[in-house]
Amino acid sequence: MAVRDAPPPAFAAVIPMPFGPFGVRTRGETVDELVFLPPDTPLLAPASPLAQQVAAELAAWLEDPDHVFELPLAARGTPFQRRVWAAIAAVPRGRCATYGALAQGLSSAPRAVGQACGANPFPLVVPCHRIVSAAGIGGFAGATGGHLLDAKRWLLAFEAVR
Image 1 (spheres, helix red, strand yellow):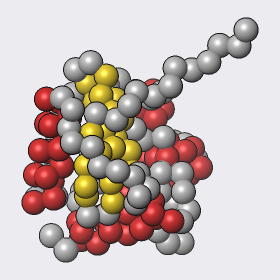
Image 2 (image 1 turned 90 degrees about the horizontal axis):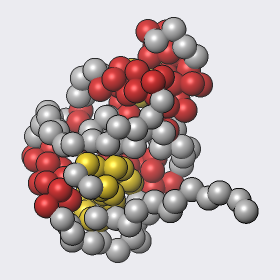
Image 3 (image 1 turned 180 degrees about the vertical axis):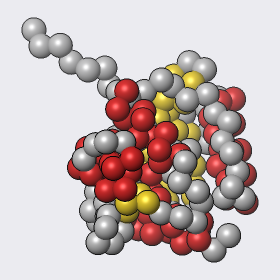
């Protein structure tokens, strides 16, 4: 009998954001994942106090993109991914860094940094949208087009004008 991964928990909220629906998954007392969702995803009111806190923090961030999130994030990722995510979190709002520059600072390769960016379970809190390719905007959340790249463009423009 094959062992299967448990299905991801249902969303505790699907919040309307200017770039599209944004899903919140919680597990116990921690935020397990934040997800950019397709434009036609139905909204879902926060189903718990933690999901309400996430919604409130996202609203605060929309008012002030320098807002510092104070969310109980689940322990996720490999040690390398956590190092990449820490480097991403150090990129100031309104600025971008390239995959190559991050890789150089981490003694790694740009592709590995890009894969860690794509695996980021906490976008916006860990602002992976600030990481771009040397030749342009690059991908986003594992995609090279569609609503995800549209979201990245919106996020970069939003943060740049503040």
